[in-house]
Image (cartoon, rainbow, N blue to C red):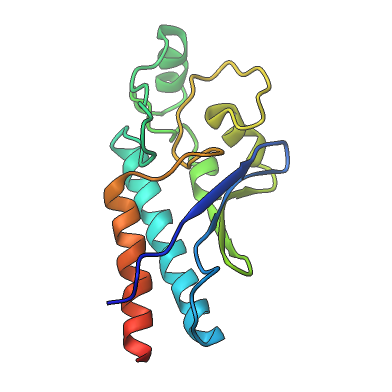
Length: 166
């Protein structure tokens, strides 16, 4: 089995880009095609994991709590507009639908690129600006990590591809 790799995470929040960058291929020796497949598999796994966690009103980020309750006013508004009464980030679905990842030279960047970035930052609080929304970290911020089971699966995906090339 391939050795464990370090997963370094940085983040940025703002009006047009709110993302976490995961660098995990710095020391991995493999063909470009293998690295591309690792990035694709890790990215798809993380998108699925993040969406499942949010639907369950949980966070995949280590050390974070997900505030599962809504304010009375917002709950009424959300229900009046056809949404559920839970904190599932699904009033219209446009923010979660626009969660994407892009390949970088040493990993992936996952988050929001474009119109929904500002809304995501309002929940994630990456930029440090004032936000009316409670902090709900569904992607890791600066210096944070995913929970152990998520990181273990990322390690498994990497090892699977590296071991397969041997």
